[in-house]
Length: 173
Image (cartoon, rainbow, N blue to C red; front, side, top):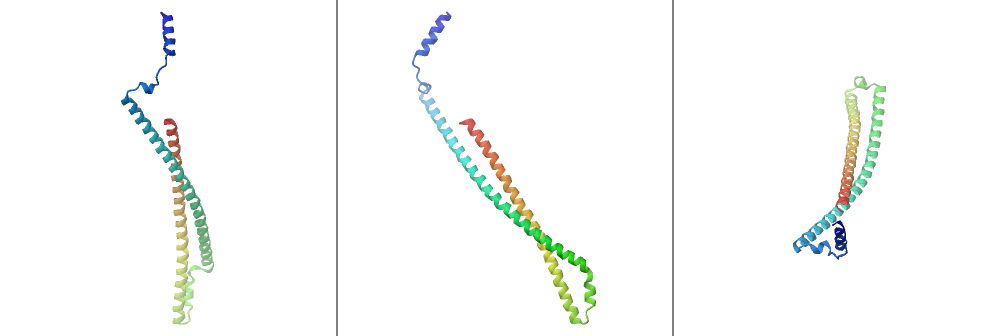
């Protein structure tokens, strides 16, 4: 009996078999065509998504380069403002910040007294502007650094999404 099975199987192999596709009913064939078309469309969409993500990564790279330059510039401005502020504070400490009363009481006339009040007001206003400029430069630096970090994080997200998409597309192709 086992000899017959062998002969039967060899006879079966030698016969010309029609392709699997030809053995399907027309409904099954149209289902297969629809499935193939859907997979082709899905692959085309995946390719478009990959290209889109690559574009996003390029844009984020450019943005990061721009933000890096802005961070460096904002840092220079903040450093310069801090230096000006330090020089002014040092000068105030050396001259005695509270000498204003001595200066005012040293006036020999009402006109000189009023002029000294204006001068002291101008100095105080200038000091306040200097301090405000420094604080603003620090705030600007923080904002630019935050934008830089955000752009960097978005680029990393795009890269991760791209890698996931590439991995998934390899599985389905």
